[in-house]
Length: 346
Image 1 (tube, rainbow, N blue to C red):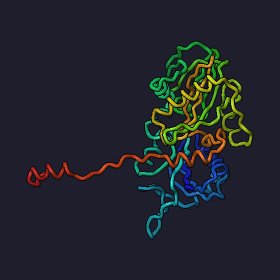
Image 2 (tube, rainbow, N blue to C red):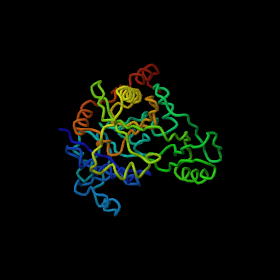
Image 3 (cartoon, rainbow, N blue to C red):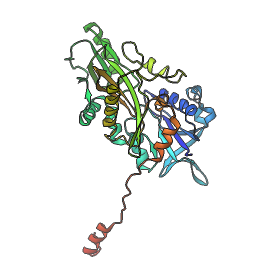
């Protein structure tokens, strides 16, 4: 059985959600685990599993833990006797939002040749921005709702009702439904508090929402059950995250074979745009059994464990199928040949 290192926290509006995700993973991933906490000032700490509780972080107790350094091959503890690497086979990027899903963590791990589960750089960048996600879906051949992108001072061209979403935030933070001019100014203030760019989409109250998670292992897709989350007007922050760590059993959505096939085919098309090595969750809209991508969660809350019957087996299988970056040999033949031709004067 592999030993996993869970990386969580970091500088993000979703910092606390990442902590909760890591605590959940401690309880559901039946494998040896190390916990690597990235503080809001971007220092890494090794957290003892017994200290994986919310108030350990909110109280600042984590600052007494051992500092970690990221080197070639993984995280290590520095001492007078040199660096001691953590005994970890595969790391899991569980940082939500900025630092984790925007590509920074992927770039760091790739740069230092670390084996990890999570989206790679390009997939992170494309899925972190809601407007770029629209382009990714277009490239994949998956429908999305009509949209416009606005910045401060721009006028909204879409007809009411609309839904406003900060372009670079997940977890339903800063989202507002606007039904008339009276609600618009406040909604814009909320959205621009978190982001300089807001995505505007039509709000369709009758549309159904479905979540499906999965990954690709050995050329074959592993799918979770398909969930139809219960919601109010839309799936807000409280509904998403105040309940994902509870023990309520998720039930499979009651849908037709055709809709199930359409959802899985859309997921495959999205995943195939560079998400190899990651377990992602896609949130879809469905109207008359036609599927539209809502958003991609490249590091879903608690890795969407609640949607799988045997979550540990899925993570183990994914860890066994990770493809290492192509090794490039630098032999200086080019420089040596030029130097030789110039008589050593270059």
